[in-house]
Length: 47
Ligand SMILES: [Zn+2]
Ligand SMILES: [Zn+2]
Image (cartoon, rainbow, N blue to C red; front, top):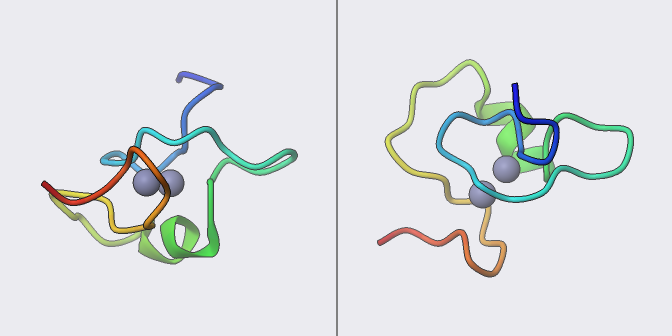
């Protein structure tokens, strides 16, 4: 797994320090299969 990437399959953000996820959004969405990330971080927006 890429350590520089959020653990959300559809998210390309850098994870927070000490976390596998970039945001609470992604952590909450880990059990949900989503086609796109909606964490609203810059560069990681729905297209
Ligand atoms: Zn994201
Ligand atoms: Zn994320």
